[in-house]
Length: 41
Image (cartoon, rainbow, N blue to C red; front, top):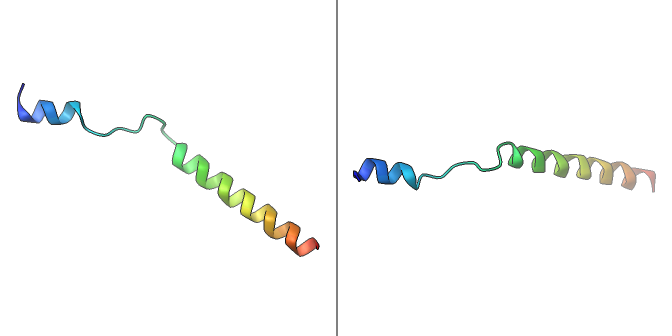
């Protein structure tokens, strides 16, 4: 097996596409709700 093919075999890949974006959205939404609740107090 050539070095190029071997490197391609072990190259990183995104098993869960969109996961990072989904987590970031949940964090943003949670922080926004927290800020809204703090203003109500």
